[in-house]
Image 1 (tube, helix red, strand yellow):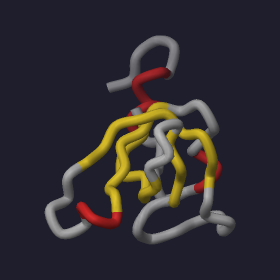
Image 2 (cartoon, rainbow, N blue to C red):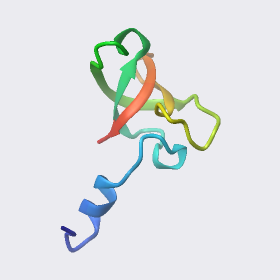
Image 3 (cartoon, rainbow, N blue to C red):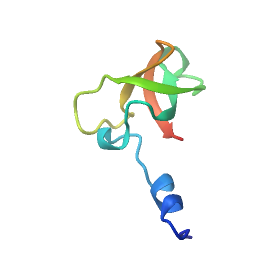
Length: 76
């Protein structure tokens, strides 16, 4: 389903594994290192993108405005 302005399409197909899809100021859900076993997600705003490569199979590593560091699982 594609809404008139393409917003639905863009939102649904942004990839948390591609650096180009993550911007400073974006709202995301990350998994912290300590939460990798449980998969608990932490929601926040991206302050810094830490992964240098264009792609990472486990998600792009970011620092949130709160200082927490983890890999992006979802872009909100």
